[in-house]
Image (tube, rainbow, N blue to C red; front, side):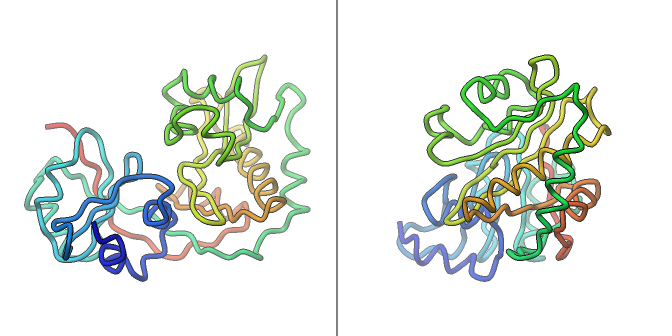
Length: 245
């Protein structure tokens, strides 16, 4: 496959998960022609990005729940035509990538304010396995083959309560010089500020290592959390949630 030609179809798309795939770290690149592609899909975990000339042949490789992200209106049209009511349209929010925007003293204050009944730790094998075991936390490590793979390529922060993982921040994807942050909290522990602490801890650890902690927001609550941690929203973009028939 001509990766260089396929990559040109995604030129200018400032998205960490696209970079991750094109740089060979994670995900799958699928095209409509292996020699001279005019249409391409990048699949990283549950998210698919579409670029080039719309071609429904790419949809044939999609299995199960996915979020479909079109590059332009022409892709929106073909997604809606092909999937009909199965594709639920909503907005996600791109967050600016600003390497020097973080106030580390403020982030450390968030971390230090964690209630004493909780413990914050960087991911180790035990925490990785805890995250794997529960549905709410699975995406904290779902894109890594095993802990050895995670340890080599990732860094994460988890909050424990009575020895059990209740919140975490970890890479959903990795790319050259950066990660795409995933933050999840166990439902009964939400709205306690734990996501703020986990996010702050992961950002601080990334900055220590010269890694950029990229953020993409699924909804306005995620935008609000990102802004609390010094990020700024760039723009909303159309996404489709693909459900079962």
